Length: 245
Image 1: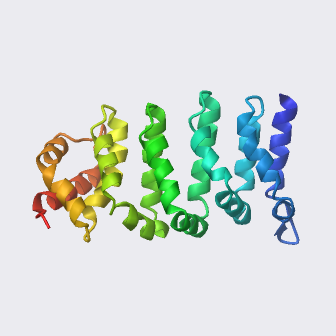
Image 2 (image 1 turned 120 degrees about the vertical axis):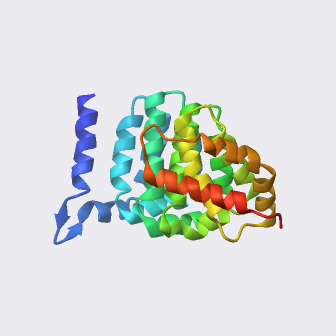
Image 3 (image 1 turned 45 degrees about the vertical axis):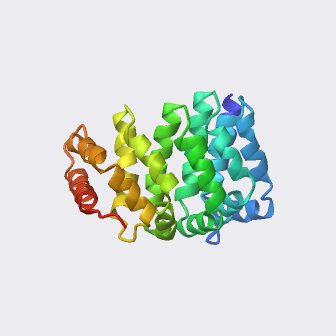
């Protein structure tokens, strides 16, 4: 066990070692990129998963390495790793997944634009609609982080133009969990704020207007949050003013 921890620390330290202002680990990884295949497959080994996961996150600090993982078939595996029955390994996979989708802004935006259809189909069905409460909570939080990032504005606009996506978010707003409700609201407000709503989005919001306004009337965070209250007021105003197209 200690040897594995030491090896993980050595890999982490090497990622920051510079020789003549170049990161030598980055150069090495670019020439031996297949090492990422081994590290990612480590999630399937209970004994090694956490060590490989820690090393993997250190390696994807480098943009070229992160791009390799994003563009590989491995990305599809993360939707299963996140739902592994071992809580620690599943949580580690979530941490790596989040790092891949948030660290390198331009690379992430390119990946999401190119892979929008399959990625969000998987994200919705396997994560946002998971039967596991923790998976849903983590997924809706990460979705908010992704869509609210300015680098992903084109992806966000596309996401909030989908009636299926709106339906999923409205279901999350009705969850008994306050934390899921709050995170879902941060995504839902993007649908409401969109000034170019497609007719089917407007139709759904108008049809459910009274239910939504009742929900938001009692919708509060545990601690006083001025920004949240301002966002909620804007959402209520937008929904109340909607006219069917």
